Length: 543
Ligand code: SAH
Ligand code: SF4
Ligand code: F3S
Image 1 (spheres, rainbow, N blue to C red):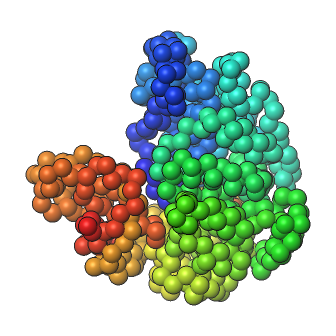
Image 2: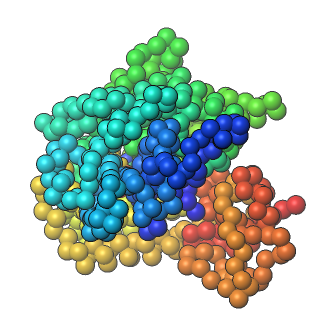
Image 3: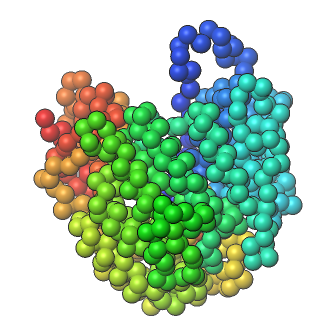
């Protein structure tokens, strides 16, 4: 699966895939395009979360609009763009570890340029970048990415491809210089208007609605790399959703580090006078008369096709912070038919002292209350979460409390990681005193507990008929190999003639393996669940 959800899951891609080649909409203009061999070729390697993948779609679009074309791999590229993640040390180390290969590439093909973009480029660490990434020619913070084409001197007179050089700005948060993210909404709007986005799928689309993060979780680098929250104007988001519906997209995922704090920084307007609910926990913010995520979900859900059904059948949003999960949002989730029955709600720990040390500003009781309200409003909703084990000072007892929380909530999916100190974060001043071996052991035990719970929850789907959005086809493997494949539900017996292996997701965000004709990719199909593993289901098409 290339489009695993929910967002902010770190996807470790060993072999990056290029963007699908963009053909001009009108085939008659093909003959006027220069020979591909004469165009600069780029390759984008994207690490990190869905926001990064969305950012890469924008960068790829700008490069294509500037007359570049894609290379099948870094070896064939004149320009290598690495869109980095910094959430844990391992994510940064992965790119640092490729510097030798990149330097060799540049020696073999003089003129090759390497751009490092994304969350590893932070203003406060700018001085150290050249030392850590010696093979890189140009560094772009996430908010500087719209300048890519101009900074490389590639801007063409014909194409609106982004911002001119050095229009991004910084701001100071807690005495630290961070990117301001101010112009990102406008840069996105320009890409949408010029139709230059190189979306990586024609079935599911990312739709960023708020950039940056205003929280101050003590372990987290994101506020330093992405700056404070900046919401996109309401009408621009709805317009982009309308364009996606017209283009036939079946699924849209609204993206933000804290997607449910959307709108608090937008100007108050009369038409949103009914929006008033504030936060129950966390810092107070003024929400009155500003659009919120609930309003946005209802507006996008309200885009209807000729049959009266939602024009975009599936609407998702990630990631939600427990501060901002309002009753208005829960009601929208329950009442908007297109809003999928899945909620990603990171909890991080099952112990109040650890949560306080993490700066999460809620306790376990508040979190459990939220899950209860959500489940009462949307029966059967799939709830997933993120957990950090081995945070500073975490005792065995505090860790066990997290295991108990998993047993109490019975999540459908848990993304867990061992704590990794990040430079400049408040927690980096605390002792990272849980030994690596203990972190590893805690992580493994937690994953085993969740594997059992996830398996049990998936087994509840056995025999039921479910709607699957097919988004992937894999060629049939030889019969002898059928049933092989790490992490995949075993496939018994050879595939029927003309069938291929298909992959897709249910509204509850369950991964489903199917067999069927390849032309079902992009279709919403009915399937009966025949097998349930801990991480996926296997079904057969219902005719
Ligand atoms: N904005 C989202 C999460 C973004 S980061 C939220 O607050 O829920 C995705 C996940 O990475 C986090 O939920 C957290 O579990 C994990 N993470 C963040 N910083 C980390 C660190 N320093 N070490 C280990 N995991 C971390
Ligand atoms: Fe990081 Fe916390 Fe912001 Fe999530 S809410 S991005 S964990 S600071
Ligand atoms: Fe995403 Fe990694 Fe940045 S998780 S926000 S790419 S640090």
